[in-house]
Image (cartoon, rainbow, N blue to C red):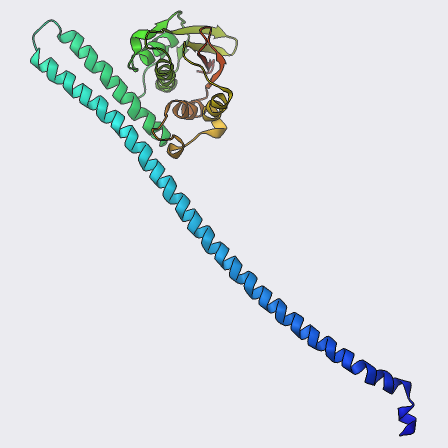
Amino acid sequence: MTQYLQDPALWALIAGTPLAATAIIRGRKARANLRREKAELEKRAADLENNYAEAVQEAHTRAEEATKSALKSAMRTLQGLANEQQLAISKTQDKYGEHQILQDLLEIDHMNSQFGRRAQSIAVLCDGWLGRQRAVASVYDVVRSAKGRIRHYTRVEIRSQSNFALVSRAVEPVALALAELLDNATSYSAPDSPIDITIRTVPKGVCVIIDDAGVGMNEEEKNRADKLLSATHATGVTGLGNPPQFGFAVIGVLAARYGFTVSVDSASPYGGVRAVVLLPRTF
């Protein structure tokens, strides 16, 4: 027995046993803590997933509401034009047979053109059909068609002409894009100021230049317009705001779809905005 008690290995074993037991206990506690932390992390992950799903649903709801609001506001515009048209028709019926009938019919036709333009714009933003395809036409005739689709058409002056012809598939899209630019130009400039249109042949095709005498745009507005007009930053209905601003968004979709470019990043000679539409020779 004394021999065993004098064995160093025995004393080392006796001394190490409490340490080993302590290490085992600590290891068990560490594993228990890790299991608790894992459970907490799993719970947090589940909560985050639920919160994410709720956030997505909330964002979807907001987008849906924004879409409905934008379309509702647009419909008000269409309803207003429809009411004006109906009133003009009623007046024409009362005056039937008088010499003013031609002028009355022209007014009806003009209001109907505005009605059709707004409907086309909504269709474009919803990836819809423009509704009609015209025959081959000169740029000058397309510009005249665009002029007739805005409310304040009498303020628009076409300063030059061009025999450059557009293929039939491009006539209506270009006319609608120009009409939206002209509508912007008349809306954001003084009621008595003119809007000048110049048609210029360039090596890459033909440029239609629209100059207004409005307040112009600051850098933030120019950047936003550039994004809307860019093929890579086309927006949907939910990005139009309330009330919706169709112009640049519609033009951007048309430009991307039919292959022409539009810029509004320079000033006109009158201090307003200069819009340049470049129609390539492939048109």
